[in-house]
Amino acid sequence: MKRNYYSPYRSARSTPPAPGLIPGVERVESLVILGVHISNNMTMNNHLDDLMTTCNQSMFALRTLKRAGLDNEAIWRISRATLVAKMLYGSSAWWGFATKSNIDSLEGVLRRATKWSLCPPGGPTVETMVQQADVKLFNKILGDSEHVMYGLLPPVKSITYNLRPRAHNRVLPLKTCTLAKNFIYRMLYT
Image 1 (cartoon, one colour):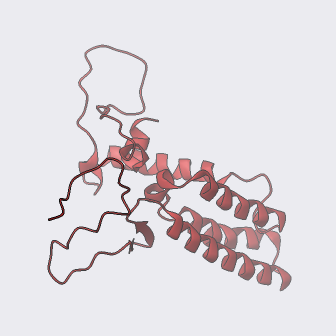
Image 2 (image 1 turned 135 degrees about the horizontal axis):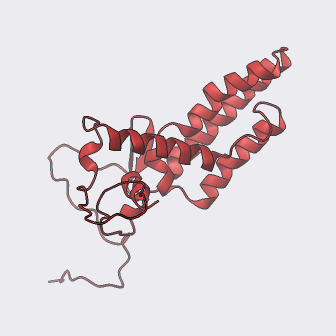
Image 3 (image 1 turned 180 degrees about the vertical axis):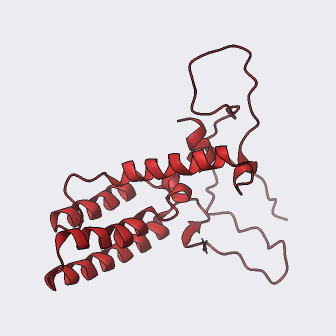
């Protein structure tokens, strides 16, 4: 009889997947939640590959409009409403899990759009726009106790002394590797 034992030298891929907890429900490698692809290993490669495809399609459509004679101001407004909006959609959920190469790819799309005069020159980077959107969302969550994400915030920290103003008055939870990529934890520590 062969024994099953745990070995720290076994790779995660060599172990068979755990049986399904619910009969008839199969395990999947990734799923789409509100337009954001989430994979079982918490990488955003699938989502960002799809995002790059849709951004390139949007840039083709914008270049077609530009060739048809649309002026720069109109192209820039349409670009902001389509291309940039697609890049920023759900960024609070996936930004912390994106790799440096993923972010560089998005920055490359924005640079190409600027080079082709589809976006105004000297505009903000993707990272800057994401950070602005994150701060705006976090402030909405902090200020509205009825917000759907308000319950995810840690408790209020009671401070009996007067120090410099902080970005929030919440208890800082223990920072772990995976949780540090989460939106709430990223915002609490910035």
